[in-house]
Picture 1 (cartoon, one colour):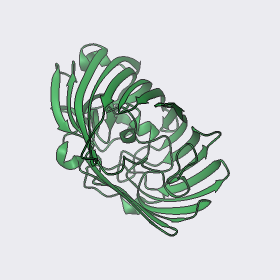
Picture 2 (picture 1 turned 30 degrees about the vertical axis):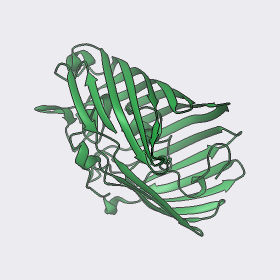
Picture 3 (picture 1 turned 90 degrees about the vertical axis):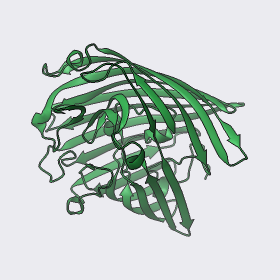
Length: 365
């Protein structure tokens, strides 16, 4: 994706425009008998080393910029059948909803680190009975500190998750999941524990030549035995008709306002401790966008798109770092135009391993 993004305000500054290459990935899947390999190579370390301008987005030491993901984004080996599976490697933990890269919008939601657990060394087991699938996993709690970093192997197994996925009818998928994540933002393990919950419903509804896809989700993250609590609620929908599509997303998400690095307001101090949090802000955002795809020589897909986000930011707790102190006001605009280039199969749903691999919402492989 070649993207140009403009923000009318940035932390401690004025308007800014940036051009970046975002979402540069190479994906592959191999299957033979009971064995399967899911691999995703992410090249954001080379194309957006300083992150992507995205007001409200945070995580792994970045604030108001989306961090570059690790190079080995997915490397998971699974063995099993349609009824049971075991998956081992580095990738997504069975928790929460789909990764934003495989969803309609260009801009990541504020709740990315509340609704997904990724880039972990994970061992997961799954069972499937009729319209229900249950997954459970052990993994390392620490988040990456830089794109080339591997998980802290000595911390493997200090965290766990479980997810129940239901397919109540063709075109519908519901999930509820929970996770206990040890010290995600302090690699040696001295940081506070996070207890997470996520509930979501996803739908795909074909209507003649059109198709409507939608997602609604709710989540809660409790840090330091509930001393800090963060909530998120999100709803998004996309209408596809032929090669054209349009989408919208509504989001209400709390995020921590952390102590920023002196001289770089887009970065927060690491390692992170509970006393690094100066307050909690609430981001109420509305995103709308549209795109159209052209296919060149039956092999390469070209998709120009445009997207606009309006955010209203309020203070939940804390008086040290309010939205007005950071941005000068609490109503913010972001706009992007871009060109997505793709070849081969469409991007797959990352984090769907073992008993959940391959199947779409209509029961097809």
